[in-house]
Length: 327
Image (cartoon, rainbow, N blue to C red; front, side, top):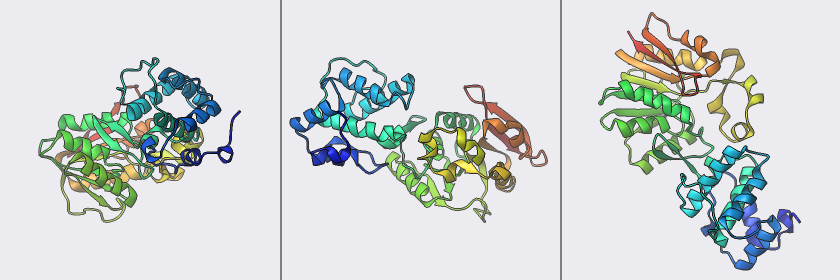
């Protein structure tokens, strides 16, 4: 028998199942008794309190939302978060799971069934070796953006002046600063909430990066000079939204994802203008792009101002990045 939230006789269940979205939930937030969890286990059809039994219940509950590989990854993330089991272990046996940890998994399953990204459920992700807190204030850092960071680090001077436009969570700027500690790194974003998150991440990582809320289409840092400009701006046309998965479309900030279909390259033209005025001769701009608009985006960087304009594929073979050197 599957009980609804209102049917549950224990207030603790109503608290778990109606927990506020986008906030990490941990079992230590609420008390727990064996009787409560025993009722929950029987209602939710968990065979026993073993990790293997929990894995079976987890897969059964979410099989219509994720494929087998995704389920394995998500379960491993939750096990690392709640049970301190290394992500790489991926071996689930008869280990007993405490009642409070079962509640944590039940709360996570409920949120995942609503297509909430796992990074928001646990409250963080890893980007270029750094643990980054996540929230709906900014896009979730992605592996392909790590490739952009790697490309930037290959040629950036150790004491470079670097700015990250459309910084979001600050992941690009912070990863660069981690590997170039003598560089002066700044991040700019239009969203005050994103800048708050970026500053929080900088404090958590003890990295000295300056973050500022500003509109790159306005008079932003007009007299500043940089050695490197990097950006992962919005680049998805709104007509592409129909083909996107709910965990992206329904939860991540649309302002950071979409541009008008009538001018999908608007950010790249502005970034090229900023690069033309702010980069030193020999400095460069590196940007992540829409893989379906590689050649079109190349056209935003005129040879009058730039040389050695390069379109680079990501590890999956899709055109994903552009670098251009200021003449």
